Image 1 (cartoon, rainbow, N blue to C red):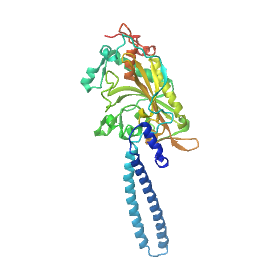
Image 2 (cartoon, one colour; image 1 turned 135 degrees about the vertical axis):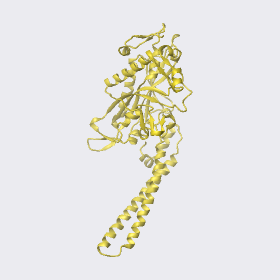
Image 3 (cartoon, rainbow, N blue to C red; image 1 turned 60 degrees about the vertical axis):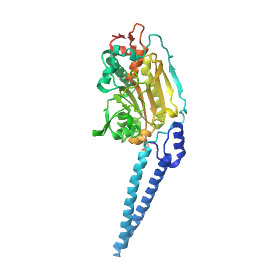
Image 4 (cartoon, rainbow, N blue to C red; image 1 turned 30 degrees about the vertical axis):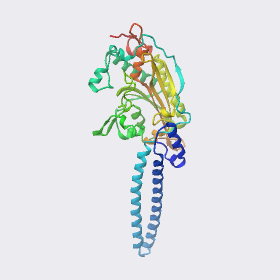
Length: 416
Protein backbone atom coordinates (compact mmCIF):
# COMPACT_ATOMS: atom_id res chain seq x y z
CA UNK A 1 0.00 0.00 0.00
CA UNK A 2 1.27 3.48 -0.80
CA UNK A 3 2.00 5.95 1.97
CA UNK A 4 -1.39 7.62 2.70
CA UNK A 5 0.42 10.86 3.52
CA UNK A 6 1.04 11.31 -0.22
CA UNK A 7 -2.71 11.88 -0.67
CA UNK A 8 -2.56 14.78 1.76
CA UNK A 9 0.87 16.17 0.84
CA UNK A 10 1.12 15.88 -2.94
CA UNK A 11 -1.69 14.38 -5.01
CA UNK A 12 0.24 15.21 -8.19
CA UNK A 13 2.46 12.20 -7.46
CA UNK A 14 -0.62 9.97 -7.70
CA UNK A 15 -1.66 11.38 -11.08
CA UNK A 16 1.85 11.20 -12.52
CA UNK A 17 2.29 7.61 -11.35
CA UNK A 18 -0.95 6.53 -13.03
CA UNK A 19 0.07 8.35 -16.20
CA UNK A 20 3.41 6.55 -16.28
CA UNK A 21 1.79 3.18 -15.62
CA UNK A 22 -0.94 3.93 -18.19
CA UNK A 23 -3.78 2.67 -15.99
CA UNK A 24 -7.14 4.05 -14.93
CA UNK A 25 -7.96 4.74 -11.30
CA UNK A 26 -10.43 7.01 -9.53
CA UNK A 27 -7.96 9.30 -7.74
CA UNK A 28 -10.66 11.90 -7.10
CA UNK A 29 -12.69 9.38 -5.11
CA UNK A 30 -9.63 8.39 -3.10
CA UNK A 31 -8.88 12.04 -2.29
CA UNK A 32 -12.53 12.62 -1.36
CA UNK A 33 -12.60 9.66 1.02
CA UNK A 34 -9.21 10.53 2.49
CA UNK A 35 -10.32 14.12 3.16
CA UNK A 36 -13.59 12.90 4.66
CA UNK A 37 -11.95 10.44 7.04
CA UNK A 38 -9.45 13.08 8.20
CA UNK A 39 -12.21 15.66 8.73
CA UNK A 40 -14.31 13.21 10.71
CA UNK A 41 -11.32 12.49 12.94
CA UNK A 42 -10.88 16.23 13.52
CA UNK A 43 -14.54 16.47 14.59
CA UNK A 44 -14.14 13.47 16.89
CA UNK A 45 -11.09 15.06 18.52
CA UNK A 46 -13.01 18.33 19.04
CA UNK A 47 -15.96 16.51 20.60
CA UNK A 48 -13.65 14.53 22.89
CA UNK A 49 -11.93 17.72 24.04
CA UNK A 50 -15.33 19.27 24.68
CA UNK A 51 -16.44 16.18 26.62
CA UNK A 52 -13.27 16.31 28.72
CA UNK A 53 -13.97 19.95 29.55
CA UNK A 54 -17.56 19.22 30.60
CA UNK A 55 -16.47 16.16 32.61
CA UNK A 56 -14.00 18.30 34.54
CA UNK A 57 -16.76 20.89 35.12
CA UNK A 58 -19.09 18.18 36.42
CA UNK A 59 -16.42 16.98 38.87
CA UNK A 60 -15.89 20.51 40.19
CA UNK A 61 -19.64 21.19 40.58
CA UNK A 62 -20.21 17.80 42.19
CA UNK A 63 -17.60 18.55 44.85
CA UNK A 64 -19.36 21.87 45.50
CA UNK A 65 -22.68 19.95 45.70
CA UNK A 66 -24.20 22.09 42.91
CA UNK A 67 -26.75 21.01 40.31
CA UNK A 68 -25.02 19.07 37.52
CA UNK A 69 -28.06 17.73 35.64
CA UNK A 70 -27.68 20.26 32.82
CA UNK A 71 -24.04 19.30 32.28
CA UNK A 72 -24.73 15.57 32.48
CA UNK A 73 -27.32 15.90 29.70
CA UNK A 74 -24.88 17.90 27.62
CA UNK A 75 -22.20 15.20 28.15
CA UNK A 76 -24.68 12.51 27.13
CA UNK A 77 -25.44 14.31 23.86
CA UNK A 78 -21.75 14.72 23.09
CA UNK A 79 -21.09 11.00 23.70
CA UNK A 80 -23.90 10.19 21.30
CA UNK A 81 -22.42 12.54 18.70
CA UNK A 82 -18.98 10.92 19.13
CA UNK A 83 -20.53 7.48 18.69
CA UNK A 84 -22.24 8.58 15.44
CA UNK A 85 -19.04 10.16 14.16
CA UNK A 86 -17.04 7.02 14.94
CA UNK A 87 -19.55 4.93 12.99
CA UNK A 88 -19.22 7.34 10.06
CA UNK A 89 -15.46 7.15 10.29
CA UNK A 90 -15.51 3.34 10.35
CA UNK A 91 -17.66 3.24 7.21
CA UNK A 92 -15.49 5.83 5.47
CA UNK A 93 -12.27 4.04 6.51
CA UNK A 94 -13.61 0.79 5.04
CA UNK A 95 -14.43 2.48 1.72
CA UNK A 96 -11.05 4.24 1.73
CA UNK A 97 -9.16 1.02 2.47
CA UNK A 98 -11.01 -0.91 -0.24
CA UNK A 99 -10.02 1.78 -2.74
CA UNK A 100 -6.41 2.44 -1.74
CA UNK A 101 -5.63 -1.30 -1.83
CA UNK A 102 -6.19 -1.09 -5.60
CA UNK A 103 -3.69 1.74 -6.07
CA UNK A 104 -0.32 0.49 -7.49
CA UNK A 105 3.09 1.18 -6.05
CA UNK A 106 4.88 4.40 -6.97
CA UNK A 107 7.30 3.83 -9.87
CA UNK A 108 10.95 4.60 -9.12
CA UNK A 109 12.40 7.59 -10.94
CA UNK A 110 15.06 5.45 -12.69
CA UNK A 111 12.40 3.36 -14.46
CA UNK A 112 11.94 4.24 -18.17
CA UNK A 113 8.59 5.19 -19.70
CA UNK A 114 7.05 2.80 -22.25
CA UNK A 115 10.24 1.35 -23.73
CA UNK A 116 12.14 -1.49 -22.01
CA UNK A 117 15.88 -1.11 -21.60
CA UNK A 118 18.22 -4.04 -22.21
CA UNK A 119 20.92 -3.83 -19.53
CA UNK A 120 22.74 -7.13 -20.04
CA UNK A 121 23.05 -9.79 -22.74
CA UNK A 122 24.77 -13.15 -22.18
CA UNK A 123 25.34 -15.03 -25.42
CA UNK A 124 23.67 -14.50 -28.76
CA UNK A 125 20.35 -15.82 -30.09
CA UNK A 126 20.96 -18.96 -32.13
CA UNK A 127 18.98 -21.71 -33.78
CA UNK A 128 20.01 -24.58 -36.01
CA UNK A 129 17.96 -27.06 -37.98
CA UNK A 130 17.99 -29.66 -35.20
CA UNK A 131 16.67 -27.23 -32.60
CA UNK A 132 12.95 -27.79 -32.14
CA UNK A 133 10.32 -26.41 -29.77
CA UNK A 134 10.37 -28.60 -26.67
CA UNK A 135 6.72 -29.60 -27.07
CA UNK A 136 7.54 -31.40 -30.32
CA UNK A 137 9.66 -34.01 -28.53
CA UNK A 138 8.31 -33.60 -24.98
CA UNK A 139 6.85 -37.09 -24.70
CA UNK A 140 10.17 -38.67 -25.59
CA UNK A 141 11.75 -37.18 -22.47
CA UNK A 142 8.76 -37.83 -20.19
CA UNK A 143 6.71 -34.60 -20.44
CA UNK A 144 3.07 -35.65 -20.82
CA UNK A 145 0.62 -32.83 -21.55
CA UNK A 146 -2.21 -35.24 -22.38
CA UNK A 147 -1.98 -37.01 -19.01
CA UNK A 148 -1.97 -33.64 -17.23
CA UNK A 149 -5.07 -32.55 -19.12
CA UNK A 150 -6.78 -35.88 -18.39
CA UNK A 151 -6.15 -35.50 -14.67
CA UNK A 152 -6.68 -31.78 -14.13
CA UNK A 153 -7.51 -30.05 -17.43
CA UNK A 154 -5.51 -27.89 -19.80
CA UNK A 155 -2.51 -26.10 -18.36
CA UNK A 156 -1.36 -29.04 -16.21
CA UNK A 157 1.47 -31.47 -16.99
CA UNK A 158 2.69 -34.86 -15.80
CA UNK A 159 6.46 -35.45 -15.71
CA UNK A 160 7.99 -38.91 -15.57
CA UNK A 161 11.36 -40.58 -15.86
CA UNK A 162 14.18 -38.28 -16.98
CA UNK A 163 11.95 -35.19 -17.09
CA UNK A 164 10.83 -35.70 -13.48
CA UNK A 165 14.42 -36.28 -12.42
CA UNK A 166 15.60 -33.16 -14.27
CA UNK A 167 12.89 -31.03 -12.62
CA UNK A 168 13.95 -32.29 -9.18
CA UNK A 169 17.64 -31.80 -9.99
CA UNK A 170 17.03 -28.21 -11.03
CA UNK A 171 15.21 -27.42 -7.78
CA UNK A 172 18.04 -28.91 -5.71
CA UNK A 173 20.73 -27.12 -7.71
CA UNK A 174 18.99 -23.76 -7.37
CA UNK A 175 18.40 -24.09 -3.63
CA UNK A 176 21.98 -25.28 -2.99
CA UNK A 177 23.50 -22.44 -5.03
CA UNK A 178 21.43 -19.72 -3.39
CA UNK A 179 22.24 -21.04 0.08
CA UNK A 180 25.96 -20.87 -0.86
CA UNK A 181 25.40 -17.24 -1.81
CA UNK A 182 24.01 -16.32 1.60
CA UNK A 183 20.32 -17.19 1.49
CA UNK A 184 18.54 -19.10 4.26
CA UNK A 185 16.29 -21.88 3.00
CA UNK A 186 12.60 -22.00 3.99
CA UNK A 187 9.82 -24.38 3.08
CA UNK A 188 6.40 -22.82 3.54
CA UNK A 189 2.71 -23.76 3.16
CA UNK A 190 1.00 -23.64 -0.21
CA UNK A 191 -2.29 -22.53 1.35
CA UNK A 192 -2.52 -19.11 2.99
CA UNK A 193 -5.12 -16.92 4.63
CA UNK A 194 -6.69 -13.97 2.82
CA UNK A 195 -4.75 -11.33 4.74
CA UNK A 196 -1.50 -13.01 3.71
CA UNK A 197 -2.41 -12.54 0.04
CA UNK A 198 -3.41 -8.94 0.76
CA UNK A 199 -0.04 -8.40 2.41
CA UNK A 200 1.96 -8.99 -0.78
CA UNK A 201 -0.55 -7.32 -3.11
CA UNK A 202 -2.19 -10.31 -4.80
CA UNK A 203 -5.52 -9.42 -3.19
CA UNK A 204 -7.88 -7.81 -3.67
CA UNK A 205 -6.82 -6.70 -7.16
CA UNK A 206 -5.90 -10.07 -8.68
CA UNK A 207 -8.50 -12.36 -7.12
CA UNK A 208 -9.61 -13.61 -10.54
CA UNK A 209 -6.09 -14.92 -11.23
CA UNK A 210 -5.93 -16.95 -8.01
CA UNK A 211 -7.27 -20.30 -6.88
CA UNK A 212 -9.27 -20.19 -3.66
CA UNK A 213 -10.83 -22.68 -1.27
CA UNK A 214 -13.98 -20.83 -0.24
CA UNK A 215 -15.03 -23.29 2.48
CA UNK A 216 -11.88 -22.55 4.49
CA UNK A 217 -11.20 -19.02 3.19
CA UNK A 218 -7.76 -20.13 2.04
CA UNK A 219 -5.87 -19.35 -1.16
CA UNK A 220 -3.35 -21.38 -3.14
CA UNK A 221 -0.15 -19.39 -3.49
CA UNK A 222 0.81 -18.03 -6.94
CA UNK A 223 4.44 -17.81 -5.79
CA UNK A 224 6.46 -18.56 -2.65
CA UNK A 225 6.96 -14.79 -2.36
CA UNK A 226 3.58 -14.68 -0.61
CA UNK A 227 4.40 -16.83 2.44
CA UNK A 228 8.09 -15.88 2.51
CA UNK A 229 7.42 -12.14 2.81
CA UNK A 230 4.67 -12.74 5.36
CA UNK A 231 6.97 -14.71 7.67
CA UNK A 232 8.00 -11.29 8.96
CA UNK A 233 4.54 -9.70 9.17
CA UNK A 234 3.71 -7.86 12.39
CA UNK A 235 7.33 -7.94 13.49
CA UNK A 236 9.99 -5.37 14.33
CA UNK A 237 13.44 -6.51 13.22
CA UNK A 238 16.56 -5.08 14.91
CA UNK A 239 18.65 -3.09 12.43
CA UNK A 240 21.70 -5.24 13.08
CA UNK A 241 19.85 -8.33 11.77
CA UNK A 242 19.21 -6.75 8.37
CA UNK A 243 19.59 -7.36 5.49
CA UNK A 244 17.85 -10.75 5.32
CA UNK A 245 18.00 -13.03 2.26
CA UNK A 246 15.76 -16.12 2.10
CA UNK A 247 15.02 -18.74 -0.54
CA UNK A 248 12.20 -21.20 -0.89
CA UNK A 249 10.90 -23.73 -3.36
CA UNK A 250 7.15 -24.09 -3.95
CA UNK A 251 4.59 -25.23 -6.41
CA UNK A 252 2.75 -22.19 -7.78
CA UNK A 253 -0.90 -22.00 -8.82
CA UNK A 254 -2.35 -19.40 -11.20
CA UNK A 255 -5.59 -19.25 -13.12
CA UNK A 256 -3.93 -16.86 -15.61
CA UNK A 257 -7.35 -15.23 -16.14
CA UNK A 258 -7.21 -13.05 -19.23
CA UNK A 259 -3.77 -14.39 -20.23
CA UNK A 260 -4.74 -17.86 -21.41
CA UNK A 261 -4.58 -18.16 -25.17
CA UNK A 262 -1.14 -16.65 -25.72
CA UNK A 263 2.17 -18.51 -25.30
CA UNK A 264 0.30 -21.55 -24.10
CA UNK A 265 2.15 -24.34 -25.85
CA UNK A 266 4.41 -26.67 -23.91
CA UNK A 267 5.69 -25.61 -20.50
CA UNK A 268 5.52 -21.90 -21.21
CA UNK A 269 2.27 -21.09 -19.39
CA UNK A 270 0.93 -23.52 -16.81
CA UNK A 271 -1.74 -23.35 -14.10
CA UNK A 272 0.60 -25.27 -11.78
CA UNK A 273 4.37 -24.98 -11.97
CA UNK A 274 7.44 -25.13 -9.74
CA UNK A 275 9.57 -22.16 -8.85
CA UNK A 276 12.46 -21.29 -6.57
CA UNK A 277 11.81 -17.85 -5.07
CA UNK A 278 14.24 -15.33 -3.61
CA UNK A 279 13.09 -12.74 -1.05
CA UNK A 280 15.03 -9.98 0.66
CA UNK A 281 14.03 -7.92 3.71
CA UNK A 282 16.18 -4.82 3.52
CA UNK A 283 17.00 -1.54 5.15
CA UNK A 284 15.55 1.20 2.89
CA UNK A 285 18.93 2.72 2.11
CA UNK A 286 20.25 -0.65 0.90
CA UNK A 287 17.31 -1.92 -1.15
CA UNK A 288 18.45 -0.83 -4.62
CA UNK A 289 21.89 -2.37 -4.11
CA UNK A 290 20.10 -5.50 -2.93
CA UNK A 291 18.02 -5.47 -6.11
CA UNK A 292 21.17 -5.60 -8.25
CA UNK A 293 22.45 -8.51 -6.13
CA UNK A 294 19.12 -10.27 -6.56
CA UNK A 295 19.42 -10.06 -10.34
CA UNK A 296 23.00 -11.35 -10.18
CA UNK A 297 21.89 -14.30 -8.04
CA UNK A 298 19.21 -15.30 -10.55
CA UNK A 299 21.64 -14.87 -13.48
CA UNK A 300 24.18 -17.07 -11.68
CA UNK A 301 21.83 -20.03 -12.06
CA UNK A 302 21.49 -19.43 -15.81
CA UNK A 303 25.26 -19.14 -16.14
CA UNK A 304 25.69 -22.52 -14.45
CA UNK A 305 23.10 -24.05 -16.77
CA UNK A 306 24.88 -22.62 -19.84
CA UNK A 307 21.81 -20.77 -21.06
CA UNK A 308 21.85 -17.58 -23.11
CA UNK A 309 19.83 -14.76 -21.62
CA UNK A 310 19.25 -11.05 -21.40
CA UNK A 311 18.26 -8.73 -18.53
CA UNK A 312 15.67 -6.05 -19.22
CA UNK A 313 14.70 -3.06 -17.11
CA UNK A 314 10.93 -2.95 -17.47
CA UNK A 315 9.18 0.30 -18.37
CA UNK A 316 6.60 1.85 -16.04
CA UNK A 317 3.63 0.64 -18.13
CA UNK A 318 4.75 -3.00 -17.96
CA UNK A 319 5.57 -3.33 -14.27
CA UNK A 320 3.81 -5.39 -11.64
CA UNK A 321 1.33 -3.86 -9.24
CA UNK A 322 3.52 -4.05 -6.11
CA UNK A 323 6.86 -3.14 -7.70
CA UNK A 324 8.73 0.16 -7.76
CA UNK A 325 11.38 -1.17 -10.12
CA UNK A 326 11.63 -4.50 -11.96
CA UNK A 327 14.19 -6.36 -14.02
CA UNK A 328 13.00 -9.25 -16.18
CA UNK A 329 15.46 -11.99 -17.10
CA UNK A 330 14.69 -13.80 -20.35
CA UNK A 331 16.35 -16.94 -21.68
CA UNK A 332 16.83 -17.60 -25.37
CA UNK A 333 14.78 -20.59 -26.58
CA UNK A 334 16.38 -21.78 -29.86
CA UNK A 335 13.50 -24.12 -30.72
CA UNK A 336 10.86 -21.57 -29.81
CA UNK A 337 13.00 -18.94 -31.59
CA UNK A 338 12.25 -16.29 -29.04
CA UNK A 339 13.22 -15.02 -25.61
CA UNK A 340 11.13 -16.23 -22.69
CA UNK A 341 10.86 -14.63 -19.25
CA UNK A 342 12.29 -16.90 -16.57
CA UNK A 343 12.68 -14.48 -13.67
CA UNK A 344 11.26 -11.16 -12.58
CA UNK A 345 13.23 -9.32 -9.88
CA UNK A 346 11.52 -6.42 -8.12
CA UNK A 347 12.05 -3.90 -5.37
CA UNK A 348 8.69 -3.20 -3.73
CA UNK A 349 10.19 -0.62 -1.34
CA UNK A 350 7.77 -0.27 1.64
CA UNK A 351 4.61 -1.13 -0.35
CA UNK A 352 4.30 -4.67 1.04
CA UNK A 353 5.83 -3.78 4.40
CA UNK A 354 3.08 -1.21 4.99
CA UNK A 355 0.46 -3.92 4.39
CA UNK A 356 2.23 -6.53 6.53
CA UNK A 357 3.51 -4.10 9.19
CA UNK A 358 7.07 -5.35 8.80
CA UNK A 359 9.37 -2.85 10.45
CA UNK A 360 12.92 -2.34 11.65
CA UNK A 361 14.19 -0.75 14.82
CA UNK A 362 17.19 1.49 14.30
CA UNK A 363 20.01 1.46 16.83
CA UNK A 364 18.73 4.90 17.81
CA UNK A 365 15.38 3.33 18.76
CA UNK A 366 13.46 4.74 15.80
CA UNK A 367 11.02 2.33 14.16
CA UNK A 368 10.34 2.45 10.42
CA UNK A 369 9.16 0.25 7.57
CA UNK A 370 11.56 -2.13 5.83
CA UNK A 371 11.82 -2.59 2.08
CA UNK A 372 10.95 -5.96 0.52
CA UNK A 373 12.36 -7.47 -2.67
CA UNK A 374 11.54 -10.64 -4.56
CA UNK A 375 12.63 -12.53 -7.63
CA UNK A 376 12.49 -15.94 -9.22
CA UNK A 377 15.63 -17.90 -8.77
CA UNK A 378 14.27 -19.29 -11.18
CA UNK A 379 11.06 -20.70 -12.73
CA UNK A 380 11.82 -24.41 -12.91
CA UNK A 381 9.54 -25.60 -15.73
CA UNK A 382 10.63 -22.86 -18.10
CA UNK A 383 14.24 -23.55 -17.16
CA UNK A 384 13.72 -27.24 -17.97
CA UNK A 385 12.27 -26.27 -21.35
CA UNK A 386 15.22 -23.95 -21.99
CA UNK A 387 17.74 -26.66 -21.18
CA UNK A 388 16.24 -29.29 -23.45
CA UNK A 389 15.92 -26.83 -26.35
CA UNK A 390 19.36 -25.24 -25.88
CA UNK A 391 21.29 -28.43 -25.26
CA UNK A 392 19.50 -30.64 -27.79
CA UNK A 393 22.21 -32.32 -29.88
CA UNK A 394 22.09 -33.27 -33.56
CA UNK A 395 21.86 -36.96 -32.64
CA UNK A 396 18.70 -36.26 -30.61
CA UNK A 397 20.32 -36.49 -27.17
CA UNK A 398 20.27 -33.67 -24.62
CA UNK A 399 23.57 -32.64 -23.07
CA UNK A 400 23.29 -32.09 -19.34
CA UNK A 401 25.09 -28.92 -18.18
CA UNK A 402 28.11 -29.77 -16.04
CA UNK A 403 26.63 -28.12 -12.92
CA UNK A 404 23.70 -30.57 -13.07
CA UNK A 405 25.60 -33.79 -13.67
CA UNK A 406 26.13 -34.69 -10.02
CA UNK A 407 22.39 -34.29 -9.49
CA UNK A 408 21.39 -36.24 -12.60
CA UNK A 409 24.18 -38.87 -12.35
CA UNK A 410 24.48 -38.64 -16.13
CA UNK A 411 26.05 -36.53 -18.86
CA UNK A 412 23.29 -36.91 -21.43
CA UNK A 413 19.58 -37.64 -21.66
CA UNK A 414 18.66 -39.90 -24.52
CA UNK A 415 15.21 -39.53 -26.03
CA UNK A 416 13.15 -42.71 -25.99
